[in-house]
Image 1 (cartoon, rainbow, N blue to C red):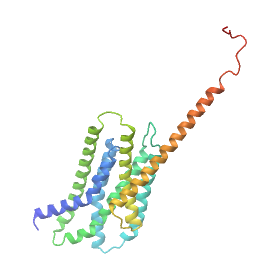
Image 2 (cartoon, rainbow, N blue to C red; image 1 turned 90 degrees about the vertical axis):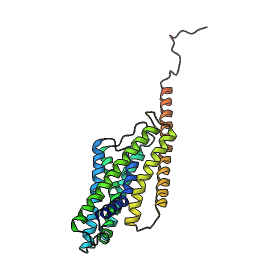
Image 3 (spheres, rainbow, N blue to C red; image 1 turned 90 degrees about the horizontal axis):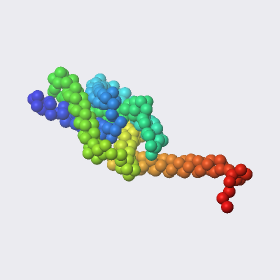
Image 4 (tube, helix red, strand yellow; image 1 turned 30 degrees about the horizontal axis):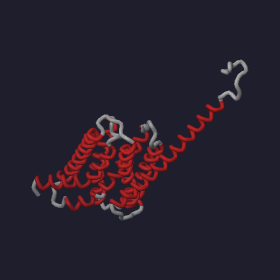
Length: 262
């Protein structure tokens, strides 16, 4: 095999396992504002997409059958991390000020990294068939190339999302419909990775990507709508109590010393 064939094969593998990383990065761009979170995300997905295929390759090479045992646990864990994040985010949906704590960010980051990276573990066994006849140094170097490709995809997707965000919303406060649409798309894509991890790794359901995305969209928008109704009802209740409180302080009778216009 020539060096060109080796590089092309490594790049192709990196693109194959990095497409979902690009999609997840694009969806998470609004949360990836601080440099610390950007570094955690990019380094996290790069390392997992370098080490997970390597681990899968080694497990296949040494005929270790631990993957079927760990897969359902990883699927449930990734789903729970993303579900807890969405629960905390949607709990305050439609509030005037909505802030994400560092704990929520860390929870989401770990969950999505696992969701988008665990399938890279399964590329390891396929790698064992791809590298037949390769020098040993090329095999290990190809894993590093995959990690670099994934990192470049994540950075490019993040920059593209930020650039499009400036074009769509150049410093103006978005309206309700635009805010709803942006939040729905963001939470739907994030929820998709949680549903994907649960269905594929834990429940062993062979659903198409569009079915999982549609399921995530229906659930997310339903929860957003219910939260909006609840907050509207709470707001009306607070306004009603405020008006009732004002009426209680009104004088019940005209004081005797108050002059009366005749």
